[in-house]
Length: 224
Length: 221
Image 1 (cartoon, chains in turn yellow, red):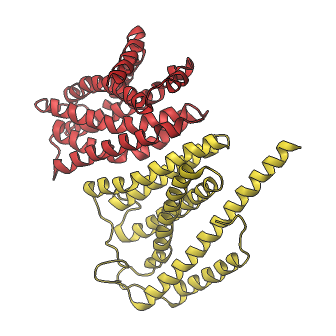
Image 2: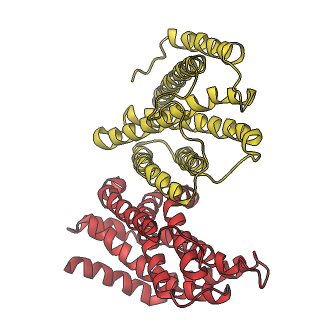
Image 3: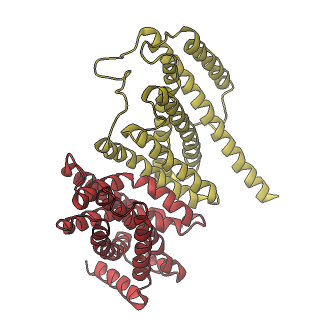
């Protein structure tokens, strides 16, 4: 992972987000049953996938901190956790906005919603720990352990809450019968996913570069 | 095995001098239970159904105290450094702490579960099985709890962070325990008790296993 933000990345993200917004509001057809509120899923679904990706990055970077030391990978883990929490917040908020007209309530204690909320809470705790602990190898080591435990816990949480209750709609894109969307909807979703992926890469690279610069400044200040 | 026995004996000796942890846990458990019982009016039909949830909430809150305090005396007297410097497998240090805390919290469960059943009009015929469920749940809590408690003692934010992290991580144990205890004490409907036990035991194995693997690394300076 480079510590410099490639200059083309923000531009590509801006173009992709503009294209996605155009497709969502001007091109994608209105869903027959749910109406216009269904358009929020073009934001909700990519945000959910990329939140999972972000937490997978946290897990892998945490394992690398344990295996090869905190340099660099601790910054990647911390940055990915921040981006993951941001995207999970988007998932929870957009899901709630979609649920109100569709289910008649803002929130239900359904398996996937509960798992997502727990995921959010665990990584907010991870970030809280980082923000309250002085930087250094000690913080990196403990954060890596929390990152690994968090990654192990999520499948168990999902299994437990599925046993408990579920009301979330079945997946419509990745399902055994193939995508259950029209071609216009699927194209819009894929463009939106690409836009979110570029925003994700942009935020991650930017945050890693910022943390790297902060650490170099701290070293310089210590020598002045 | 002999080393583990000596470490557990050390824990028992330290605790027996003042019964500090046991007495605090008991009074804390009683205070939580008394507070929770005000949530439902006397004679409400939901009281037996809620008994399992209230019993688990009491034990979970008490275990938060325990995981923080288990390593406190070691740090205060700098004996943890001595233990780690001694030719003792770190796994045994963690195991002895886990066993000592489990005995304390298990004893608390043996009091809290039947008392909750009585206070909330629950069923006492399956109270032994309910205590077993609570103890199984506490094993998983102590696995990750002691690991985080040991690590957090080295940071000033520990007291705040451990409960914040643990409550999220322990959701599977909470769901399984609340459902099983609700079934055993209050007769709440449950499709499959086997799935609940699979979640409980599976979580215990994962929690204790990862703590054993990561304990020594987490305490390195």
